[in-house]
Image 1 (cartoon, helix red, strand yellow):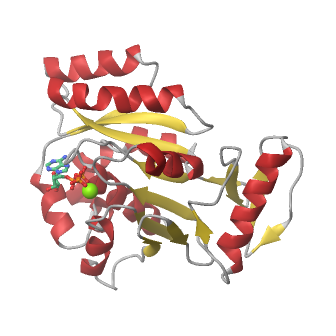
Image 2: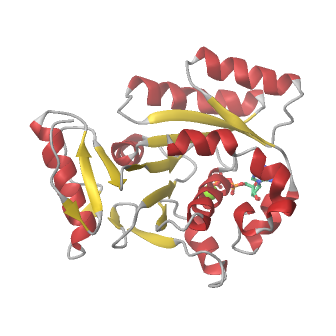
Length: 263
Ligand SMILES: Nc1ncnc2c1ncn2[C@@H]1O[C@H](COP(=O)(O)OP(=O)(O)OP(=O)(O)O)[C@@H](O)[C@H]1O
Ligand SMILES: [Mg+2]
C-alpha cells in the first residue's frame, strides 16, 4: 500500500497499486462516488484497471459483479440475494443493474419497506452510475449477452466477479469463451463460479467442478434447485428475510460464497 487520500463520508480508499494512472483513476472514481454532485461514467477513458477497494473501519468493501452472458442462469437471483444478505447485516448496500430488462431494479420495487433496505444504483442506458452517498457495499447485476465494451466496463470497477453456472454441458459450453475471456483479460478482480440448481450428488455436478478447477477457478458452492428462490423473488425478498429456521438449508449453501466475498 502506498498511501491514503483520507476519509470521505466515512469511506477510506486504500491504494493497492503504485502506478499514477491507477491512483488517478481510483481517486477520480471515489471523488465522484462520494461527492454527490457528479456521477461516474463507465465511458470515462481510463488507461488502467480500476484499483479501488473500499474500507470502513478496516473492512474490505468490494464491488461485486455478477455475470454470465448465458441467459437465465441465476445472475439476478445471486445479485438480489447477495444484496439482501448485506442489507440484513445492516450494511449500506446498493444493487445496480446494467440489464436492459432492469430485473434487479424491478425486483427492488417489489421489496417491502419493512425489510432491510437495499438502495438502487442508477445506471442509465448502461453507461452512467450514480451510487448513493454513504454506500458501503455494491452489487452489480448484468444482462445476458454481456460482452465487448460493456463487459470491460463492468470488469473495470469489479473487485469480485461471481459467475453463476448451471451443471449442463450446454451451459458450460455457452460460458466457456466468456470465462476464457475473463481469464485472458484478468484485472485485479477475483473470479469465482457458483453452481446453480445443482444436485451436488450428480455426475453433472462433478463435471462442473472438474471444468471449473481445470480453469484454475474456485467453485464457491452449489445452490439446489428450489422454488424458494422463485417465490422469494416474487415478493422482493431474499433468503435472509426469512426466519433462520425456514432458510437454514439454503442459507448454508451460501456460506462459502459469502466467506469468499467478505475475504
Ligand atoms: N436455485 C434455483 N432454484 C430454482 N429456481 C431458480 C434458482 N435460481 C434461479 N432460479 C430461477 O430461474 C430463473 C432465472 O433466474 P435469474 O432471473 O436469476 O437468471 P438470470 O441469469 O438473471 O437471467 P437473465 O439472463 O434473463 O437476466 C428465475 O425464475 C429464478 O427464480
Ligand atoms: Mg437477470
